[in-house]
Length: 579
Ligand code: M6R
Image (cartoon, rainbow, N blue to C red; front, side):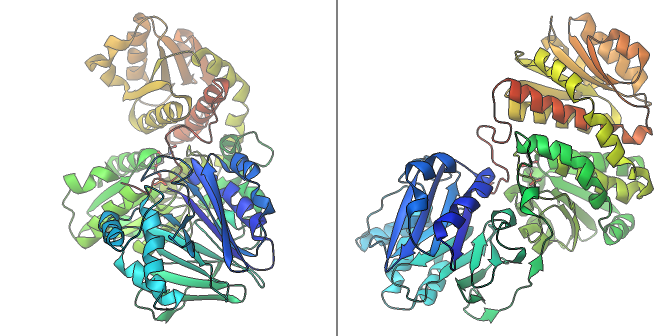
């Protein structure tokens, strides 16, 4: 998973590329580079490291020119280092490109090129594309050479390429299973892996579709399909502003996004679920596929549907094809905030082959999933930049609740979120108790279980503390052997019908010396807890929303207290575009 930005127009390209790369860094940040064309030559500067550091070290801003491309990388082929950083050049430095995705037949292409005398500077699959285009461009115009190369590639790509000898000053872009959006300005054009990278300059965009190629110049753009015929794609305008995609005064995106939940939830609630609801009501069997946090929302969906007598099950997307044989009567629902998760895309493509109808619940307009699904429900929660999903999770829950219960049930979520945010200082004190711990457990029952899973994932993802979550009844079937003096057990204990049994599980852990931290509004539970966060008295169906805000804050504060940047946890990327 990487980020691409491209610019052609009257501005200094370096400025636009640096700005765009900063916005794209959440997509990967192990190395970064730019290539800017000027008077027949292309200057490439790149290195291992993050944009702020590398651009200062290599003085990106001093490069003159009005057309260029930039890339922030998350390694897939070859370690993070200067040689493997993008942009990559052909042997003669005449073709330069940035690539996202994975070229599956790159070894074969590379071997063929070697027999023609090509030598390579990097271990990447991406460099091979530049060499391959250069092979063709000697005997045909750039667009034809670009097209011919794309037709020879197997795998996924988002590509932006420039040619040193191109007097028309054009950027050639393409997408297949890797996002690429065009940004339209006045006398200037942009391209990037996502919209926030271009928001400072324009609000008008063209999301490309899989198999599209586009040629951008200062005067506009043309879109082609892989066979070379010209086509048209829909322009969209978004009302996000740059502020919405930036930190807005918070130290980290994650904290901003936790706070944002109260501001955006009403826009989520306004989202149109009419078609989705009807499809769900009419379906005999519903398979929900998703990954990570989105899977936890999917699990909640399946619980609520099952409680209503529906045949519904949530599956981890990467395993779905190994477990299920869907048929035409199966309705598949996917939750994916990015709309680009490779595991999700392969699962839904598999389902679509069997004739299933697909509903996608996503946050990203123009993402790949929106081109595959029969019906799309948008989260409308603005861009989420922090790697840890927060506001998109509560937005997913809100959409699920709107489908199941209707809008009235969730009309006061904004106030509830504001009320829960007032607990931040108390949560911080509990975080201080946890920051030195090695192992931690979350328990809940019923609809609190997906929230326990989510609290545990959030904590381990950004604090690097080992944690596990269970339905409370499961502790005694094995995990209780891990409970000893001082091991924290976080108990999700709202006053609903799960409480009497969950209280027994709390006692089992406490007897073994566990440090009990509960989220509760029950006096008996408070009395048994070492620490607790008071929950308001709510409609029992709404406790998941209240508890997840606390658990997001808890993970955030443990992370910050440990000196970790919660926006960029190690080894993880915001959207996971490899299987
Ligand atoms: O974009 P998606 O919702 O499909 O992403 C799925 C997971 O990769 C994602 O939820 C991941 O688990 C988050 N980083 C968790 O905070």
